[in-house]
Length: 245
Image 1 (cartoon, rainbow, N blue to C red):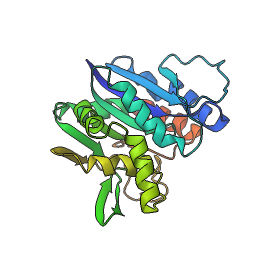
Image 2 (image 1 turned 180 degrees about the horizontal axis):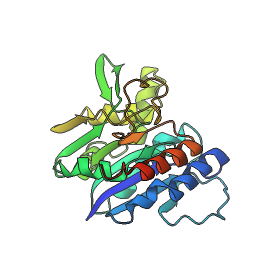
Image 3 (image 1 turned 90 degrees about the horizontal axis):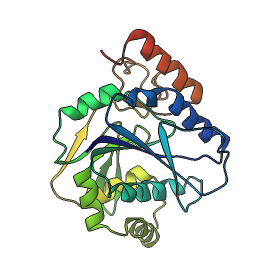
Image 4 (image 1 turned 135 degrees about the vertical axis):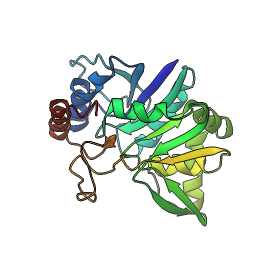
């Protein structure tokens, strides 16, 4: 059984996002070699430069475009793809997110993977059909246990179509994948929603909103990370032994 699958919805056809995936390959994803972790990167089918050799990241093309609206499709098709695999947890994220792998695994070890767990942070609420729906920030990334993923597709087998129909019928313009999945999770039973203060929508410097609160040593995951940010923060963690403390 795989302890953790990291699902990235990415893009190789545009240089900015290609560079983000390349830097993940060259930096923090290397911290997974001593752990039972797999990377699955779901990209669109638009042409891209495939000269770079990804060894840590498994690239999986989907029949979708590489645009903002495709992120939700990549999220659900990616999760559906994982159903055939034997794993405990999946971490869902974009390519501008940084993860401190040892700290994340330490957190997961304190939980029961057989529970239906929805874990994340830096979240917010949305009013949808008079319901107050809490969602973990998709920028910070969020964790789902496999039992929750199974339950999600058992109850909503055509989840992408159902979300699109819901938006059209209710005149909503909420294409955000984190809001979408939180809405469907809210319809399930016996879900354990766990909020963690070290999941940040902000970058490693606490920008734009957590400047005075962020502790770089304690970050589990952070967002809005440019390629140079990823390189700089990764080296800082290595130099200060923050991966182990």
